[in-house]
Length: 107
Length: 122
Image (cartoon, rainbow over all chains, first blue to last red; front, side):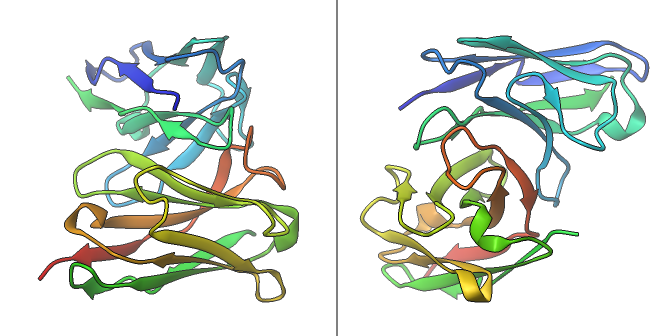
């Protein structure tokens, strides 16, 4: 199975900061990578799919890049609503896996 | 608007069984694969199982293979997760989610239900 890692596990930031989260796959997944945002007690929300395509309705301050085994989620200017946990998800095959998550907390 | 509503979450004894249901509205149900994802208390997301749009292909995580069965009833726009031989490690909130394609591979999950809590305890 493909294993996913994320770094950092926790990130302390302030409103207005530029934030980057890295996700790595144990083998190449091309661009079959999605990013989700989850807030406590809520279902995850799709932000980015196919590594870099912004889901409809998601603010343009979110962007994704990468291919193969290394991917990055960037929040260009952190807003109060963005404090949450972010998960990457590889969907390259019939067995899928999520990264362990990155919690973005207020500094 | 697409909506997914799960039901069937409960407290069950170790070794017991439970069936979760997820009913969808606002979409042509058979055109999309569906999936189940779980989240243990305080933990991350774990993909559990997926099923193609016509129900002909099913996939499972190693942790549930041989114990869980995913199925769907397209006329009723409902996907099911039959869970057998449950243990404490299966305690989690179970989310159903709509895949972006009729097949599960290369599909992300664009709509999610509110989650159903399954607690396995004696």
